[in-house]
Length: 165
Image (cartoon, rainbow, N blue to C red; front, side, top):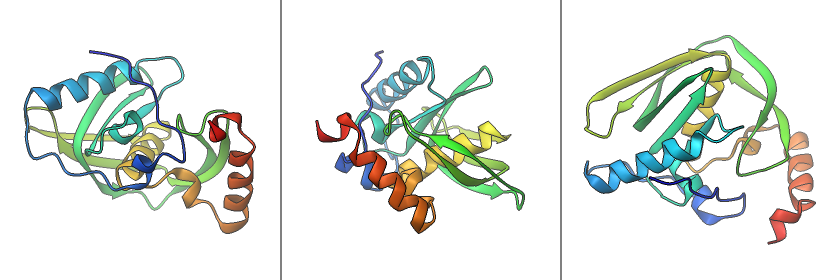
């Protein structure tokens, strides 16, 4: 369908929990196609529907050559083992902050035909699954930072030219 522009931090759609998908029709297939086209751009590991201005529970991913999507995803498993690594977000361009995430994650949901889908992964895939599901819950990753690092992140956000546009 189409590459869609990414909504930036500060856009209200990124702060609202996305609505579960209940109708599996051409509109949903168009949203999924847009998510897949948008995530296929260089430097994109995942795109949640709210990031393209659509408040539904769906995201796409492109990690280590694997591309796909999940509708109505729910995290059903997180490993006890965690990993701290620099995380970034298309909605916060040019910024990255060390964020703690589970090393392994499993997400269950459905596809555009309401058929069950399970996606699991470790490392970057686990980070992506958690990050995109957070978006669907109205959370941007810098909200997961401890108070000192979150304060610094917000300071850096305010210094970005895109924040004031």
